[in-house]
Amino acid sequence: MPIVVNSNVTATAASFHLSNANDALRKSLSRLSSGNRIVSPADDAGGMAVAYKLNSALKRTEAVHQNIQNGISYLQVQDGALEITGKILDRIAELRTMASDITKNSSDIENYSKEFIELQSQLNQVRQQKFNGSSIFALNSMTASDFAPE
Image (cartoon, rainbow, N blue to C red; front, side):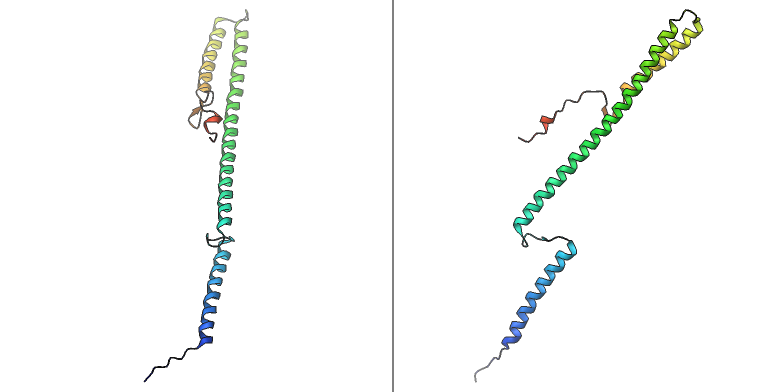
């Protein structure tokens, strides 16, 4: 006796369409929850490549911005040190002028000399100041061409 298998074509078609609709819903929810139009390379491979290039350019720009901020901070520290140096040198010149006054006694000149020695010590401390481990008055041997693309 032959076996007869009945199939419900409409149920099979409905199941197929339901499966496709669920896949589309899953993909839409994935995009919606991530906030991105492209979630995987299958969505848009070319668009994803462009997005990666733009993200890389953005990160390089952020690094450049950070380098500029570090340079500004370095120059501000250096400017402060130079300002202090100028004040110290002005005071040293003033002490020299005061010491050459004939009305000053040896005690006054000795006090000027002690202050002069202290000011020299302060100048040496300013000279030895560092910014992130680098001397603020040393020349850096690196140049921009060391980082230029070849």
